[in-house]
Amino acid sequence: MPTVPFAPPSARDVAPARPSARVDRRAVVVATVCAPLLARARRAEAKSSLIDDLRVKRLNKPVFNGGRPRAQAYPDWLEGEWRATIDFAGYEFPSAVVAREAVAREATTPGFQKLSLAYAPDVGREGKTEYRMRFARDGGDVIEDRGFNLREIVDAYVGEGAVEAVEYDARRDANRTTIRLKRGASNNAERIELFTNARDSETRESDGTFFALESLRQVTLGYSTSYGVARMVPTDYTHVWTFTPLPDVDGVDGASAGEPRIGVTGVKVVNRVKATLSTAGYLQPNDALKYTASDAANPNGAPVPRVGAASQVAFEPVVLYSHVLYLERVGCVP
Image (cartoon, rainbow, N blue to C red):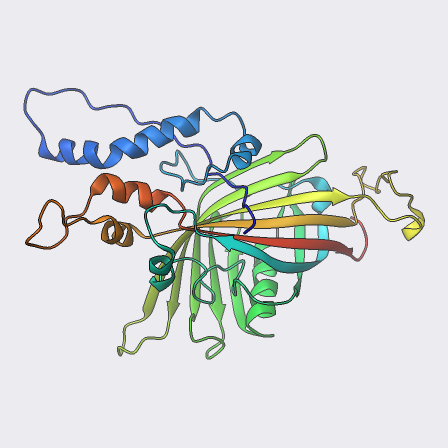
């Protein structure tokens, strides 16, 4: 199975509490639960770069977030509209604790139900899928036109006209998106709420590849068998996109391969891009407790959850997906 280069963004450390002569049970519980998380947070703080982390596959979900992340700024050469062709490239189950069969049974495992990953609504779909992508300038930065892109992606996977509306305003709140599907478009979702918890990015100087990481909490609301109660499924996952600019082909628009052109705005012209989408999916905390419970400490009763093991499982990926994309510019260069 293909490898998925991937890593969580850095996390903030937390100052230890002042010691007290009296034993505080809550402090003991917090220390027991958070100790492994704090250790991982300190290791994340020491990372040299996002690219290095991806190379060694640091896959943990972000633990602490010091502030609300801003909208991701993309390279100037991505501005404009693109025709994207995406193909599923593979998957793997990296957990040494949770079995593959157990991961597949959980409804909250990202990717195992359609629309549980908004940017990859049907993981494992055979054949290539095509849709449009758009990056637009907002002030001085080029940002993703998230409303346009998500409508295109979901319609391409679910069916033309499946999306009723996408609500997103990067200036008001860059970290929340609402996708509303038309009634009956899918049995798995009627509405999707996306919450961004962390972002990171970096450019590799050797070939200009741009890396963009985003960690998301998705809440999928759908139809239920209980009257007046909506079905609600939370999923946590991290996406990493890479965008590598490709040279023009000889003879296309008067271009010569290896000779970059400069557009009217003074930005390098890029008409073709090779991209990848890598996804790390995580278990929900309750599922992590369930799969790490042990009956060794209570042989005559119910299994006892192991908090330390559960915290490790909840923050490490249980499934990895990989997609390959090819982008071709549509229309004029900005």
